[in-house]
Length: 112
Length: 111
Figure 1 (cartoon, rainbow over the protein chains, first blue to last red):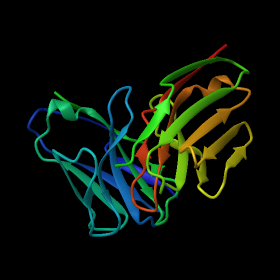
Figure 2: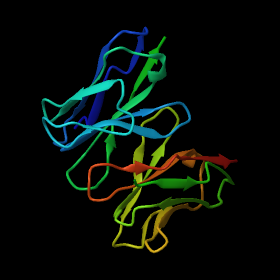
Figure 3: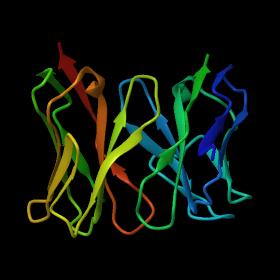
Figure 4: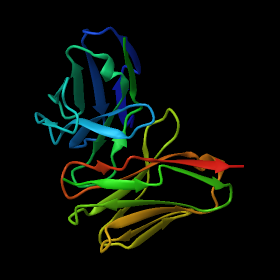
């Protein structure tokens, strides 16, 4: 099992550009999450999904959109990147009941 | 809404000594309490968790205690080693979708 994978690992964007981050999991988990982590800070939830075709807003959803068309994939989109979105983005997944969240390796995004 | 407070923000201990990190939560309906370790530049990884029907859980040098009445739980690391240096996050969850995270504790092990 690869667990949770994220693509790409690094990316530099210019202000106003758009991009999509891909998260994939092969554990058949129902729930998937997108977090951002700013330097020296904790994890903040952007959006999450409780199953295929569902999405919901987390703590800091503004400026981001998500889609979960397939159970194994959770996409995070930035329509018009801003310097404030410079961060490390982590995807996570977990089974149906409250249990361990498995994290991907992260995507380091810099917006100039 | 649910809130989780974590203390201290930084903890420095001598190698071989014990370290204790404490978290308090606000929602008495919370029933799942994990602890994650994040090494520099790496992803968070679960090191131990406890559910509300248990008061204490141990795994080798790591233990977690839960006091439901006081709504706090603690991580105990004994015989600390250099590889224990990391940021530790606590979290709390009800039987729903989200974990509510603490702000993290940077643990420094002095040689």
